[in-house]
Amino acid sequence: MNNYKNNKNNKNNKNNKNKLYYNSPSNIIFLDFETTGLQIDTLKVIEVAFNSLFIGDKGYCDLIKINECIPPFITQITNITDDMLNNNGKDEKTVVYNIYNYITNIHNIIGFINPLYFIAHNGERFDFKILINLLNKYDFHINKKWIFMDTIQLSRKLNDYNGHSMAKLCEKYNINNYDAHRAMGDVLTLMDIYVLLSNDICRKNNYNIYTDRCNVINRIIKTLDFPEYLINFLNS
Image (cartoon, rainbow, N blue to C red; front, side):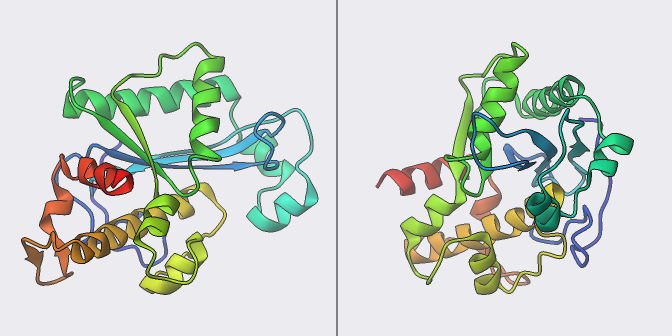
């Protein structure tokens, strides 16, 4: 992977990573898309972000040019403007190639025989569908070792809080999403949510075999086989 750098804490949510993240390559990729709407068949993707739990990975983020104006309510939510896309956006095909290369680089590092996990909030209804549609559009192969996991489903399964939106989980875990509704801001926030939510799942199921005294985070969460535990948790 060629996007590694050392980062400090997540104080301003500007592509920085804190002590919750891993010192070795991770088999988990977090993703988020900002779009012109919510209808999968008609929306246009205007921003993408991908990142892994590896503390040295700065991830991948880009704006995408589109051949139409951004609806005003989307600009109001995301602060992404037509001028930003026209001046800084890349064509969709280039971005999708970059996404695929980013994913493939990570999978190569952990080994193609091993599963690679993709995590998004409300991903089953939105982000995962968009990712698959984009890759299929440009004839990229969807690897059978890719496994998709939705944090909103994990939160609902845990069911110990009144609300499962990203905003509600930020409230629960005292996380500040300084760049909400921008793709990388939401990805970095989701990474914090994932680790803390996983820790709660472990505690509830007495799977608390070793804790990090500084962050009270289960070290088992940082192993490559831990996501399979979450899959089993969802299916239990």
